[in-house]
Length: 201
Image 1 (cartoon, rainbow, N blue to C red):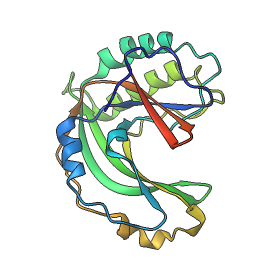
Image 2: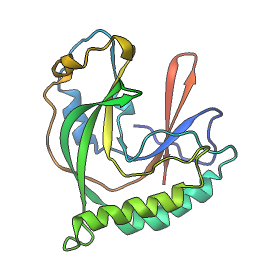
Image 3: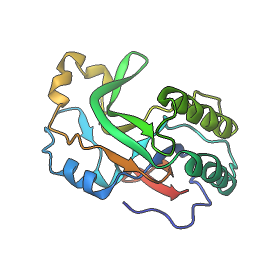
């Protein structure tokens, strides 16, 4: 996965979200699991896989990315990371009652204070993120922390039969792994389709 070295500017009309790079050993294991060829399903390219902590959103025009990165580094990365992640199940994500993507849900725990209450630690992380990100939205949205990996997009949601969810399943590794970093994931469109960029924090 290529990470941009100068994360100071965002593309026009882009969407962003907070995420983390997946360890290479885990991506390699995922890549060895054959993906079923299904009509109406577009699998995410391996090089674009990452852990999302929130949904993509439209940032405010003129967002100071450098300032945001400094805040996230000081108040989130240094305070909470690394975290231990445990893969869960594949699930459909719905918008307006239509399935738009297939996501791999993840559970996580803080390891800096292993004796701390797990639920409280997650709530603290969510609240700290909300405080930092609330001024970055064009329209304010929830910033609840829901780690997941977007595995596939459903190209025509209105034609997808949710009863066929099982057809999306395939053997995936269940190894736990550590996330030791944060990135801002940026997605925009060019003449070739969706373009992903990743900015280090």
